[in-house]
Image (cartoon, rainbow, N blue to C red):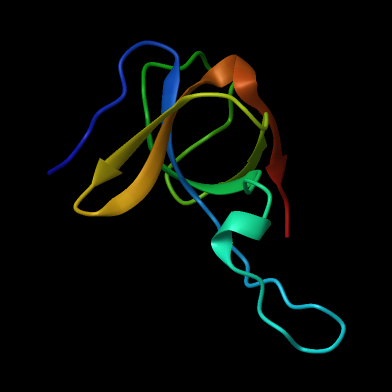
Length: 89
């Protein structure tokens, strides 16, 4: 299944990083904060001022967007205004 965002929305896939304590214990998902870094999967009809394309990494607001599952993988459909910045490597 493919999803094409409408309007000024972006489909992102959260990037989860494994968290460990100093002693090397892996923390369960329930003890982790919601990730704020994501990979852009698809973009809607954005103005030229938004320089986003599929494959970009972004930072987004903590409680923004609507969570959806696509082929059993978590994604977020988010308004462009809730994206705070683009990660530049």
